[in-house]
Length: 235
Image 1 (spheres, helix red, strand yellow):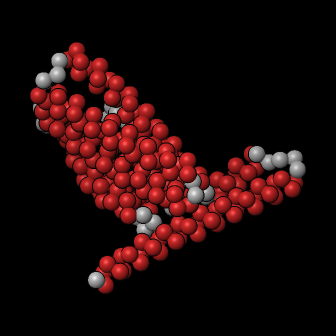
Image 2 (image 1 turned 90 degrees about the horizontal axis):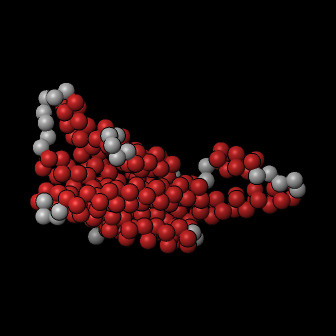
Image 3 (image 1 turned 120 degrees about the horizontal axis):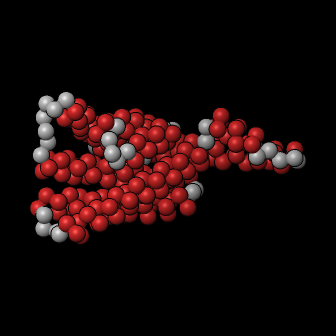
């Protein structure tokens, strides 16, 4: 389904020090994953479009990073702040759209906890990334005292890292509960094998049934999405 690839791409966003060298990789991985998921949910499609734009932005970041390393150019503090603002906007928007997509899929396949979690995280993501952008504008204009700006920036850096980790846990839940790759499930089954044969058979049956149900619901979502598209084209 693409959640495993999405997990890897989103994980790279934890690189806060040398993000200019990893953003393009993160963006391309997320683009590939969200493209695969775009047939299931409209929000994943919009998030994929955002990732495509972020890929181009990440490539520009990479080029600028290498130019700075070789002392060909030197970015001004204003340029650095503007780049950081654009990056926060892009990552925040992609994440919010992705979480809304996860929320809708979770509702469709019967995962209420994940649905509530993704919905809550979408709002938290908006607050954190708007805060990051706000701090960058404050740094540009210097209308907030440094004694306030520095601690606030540290708090928001920690909050952003924590948020990415929690968002990763939501993506991992999708990978675990919705994708349920056969190799992964078989490994987990062997590790937790019961001494009683009938218990093992029951667990295997339940896992298979849940997997089939999730696949059936996702297939229904795909067909609904395709039907809406074809209906729009006819009009």
